[in-house]
Length: 157
Image 1 (tube, rainbow, N blue to C red):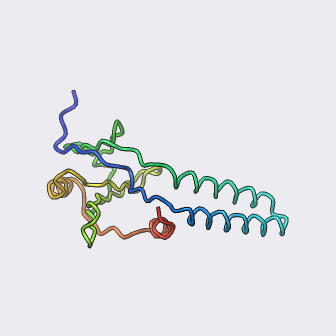
Image 2: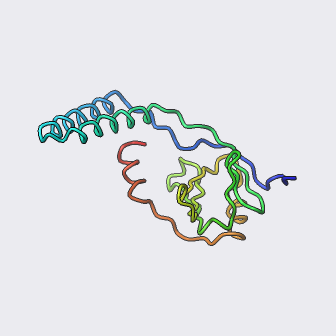
């Protein structure tokens, strides 16, 4: 029988930033220019890859983030039905927005190949309580933004 979690909350997978029409125009112009350059150099596979990538980026930009249910107990973290045990977590950090406009994020590094880094919004939950509970199970380390996070922010994701 599964015990009730110490902390339960809901949150969106990521913050949705609606894109303007200018953003889509810029994506289209850049992808058409890159595709034409690839075709000019007879790189047909690269041209197809650029078209697929641009289409994927445009579709991802319009997608609304899914709402997840989070739970934290003595064994680990639940994200919906998916369980992440403390033994697979290598470190954690609570990231806070300097301006205070965004909720704090629980950043977790794991030793898993598919999900090496989790970022969980701590909205509508006691962030200090979650921090204290995580501190008893996982080592705290400073987590810095990765290159992927910087590119996502630059692109407006």
